[in-house]
Image (cartoon, rainbow, N blue to C red):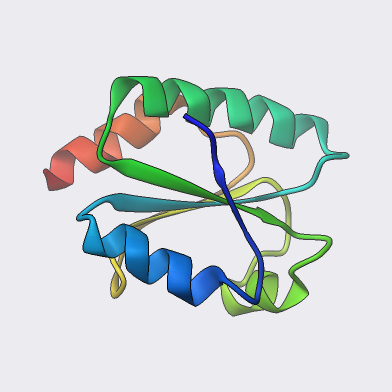
Length: 109
């Protein structure tokens, strides 16, 4: 599943659209120049292969400084999982295994 690339201009619109589809929304903060971010992408791809009710929004922390501040991102990669706009389930900096993210999501289904 391809990630949905978002920036400060389209973030709120895309998040609202994905929540309207009743999907879990995963924010992936990273950079093209970050090796750990590339590994995190592989974990998220595995997650998407296993679960169909998720949308991964990819945010380049070098470009979208406002969003990194809005979500208190200090290091990359950072992953945030929401069930609903007001219900954050998970926030982690560093590489997170697909198994761990699947567990978080399945507990809420």
